Length: 266
Image 1 (cartoon, rainbow, N blue to C red):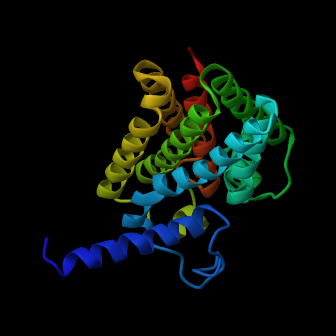
Image 2: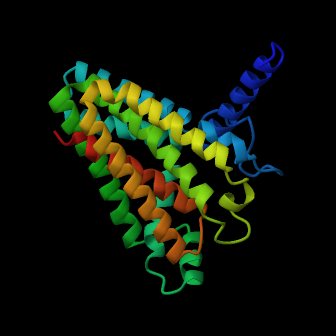
């Protein structure tokens, strides 16, 4: 790599990180708007999604550590940590999970896609949200009780990173279920971006989760997250005919839940 290309690559990576942060969170809203004339191109930029996820996990982890340090019970501290991640992302992924769950009430692909477009939350969506929050809170609290708040915070960082890589995998693997919509307008990640995203997520999980909970719990957590991801890919393909923005959010939620549950097993 030449001396001139190195700064260019760093600048490109920083631009991708900023775009991904705006796309996946409520941070830096001035970078580009969701209703801007041109949607971001994530054919390569999606590779940094796990980094953004890790940063979201860092924020939640800090809240978990501080809350525990001042004497707040671990379940409440875990709830505050999860609430922090939801606040940062604007409940974007939770909304996708709810819409995806509600779509299961449709009898045809067209009806399911129509239900996804409805902003109202139905019974399936409400139940999915309750279990998503409940399972994450209980899993984080269990890890904090067994291994300490700092290690639980590190596991949360890994879970958030891995779950964003899961989004990239589904986005890459499936075609758009319909013309228009967020998942169709933004360029799908190419093979290189998808593999880099998976590699980054794996490195983050190894660096932060492995020293915290050990080898086998980390492997088990990663395996459960992978199973959840591929299950969601199969379900989306069969029920929706491809990917939607909501299915990306649902994938993130399921992968994060699966990783945290796996990490809580001792």
